[in-house]
Length: 115
Image (cartoon, rainbow, N blue to C red; front, side, top):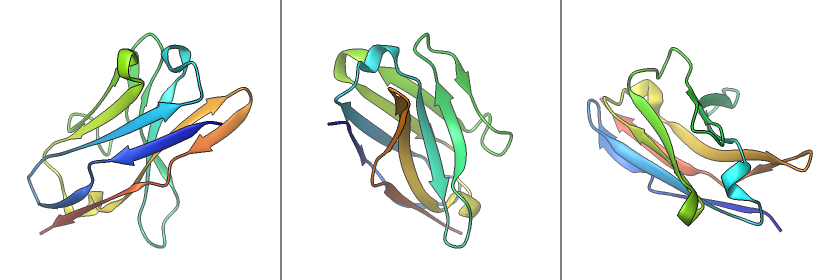
């Protein structure tokens, strides 16, 4: 069984920082590409960060320079450091991976940014 469990969401004021993390099990984490998505009410689920097994990262323009994804293979965890948060970053943040031709999602963690 593959499990992705997010933690670390919460309420923060605009301009503040927050870190969310995801603990993975049931996969060979060190070779998996890991992603963070987010979804606000009424919106589609959007990709916000990717990290490959080699540590290559990728971000959309909306978060580039503010968000940083990282991984700790020894702990099977991937984290997303979010700085200079904006009210439009308010969403539920989901951990995601593809493993053996299947997609897996965590249940998400809520991030709310107040203005």
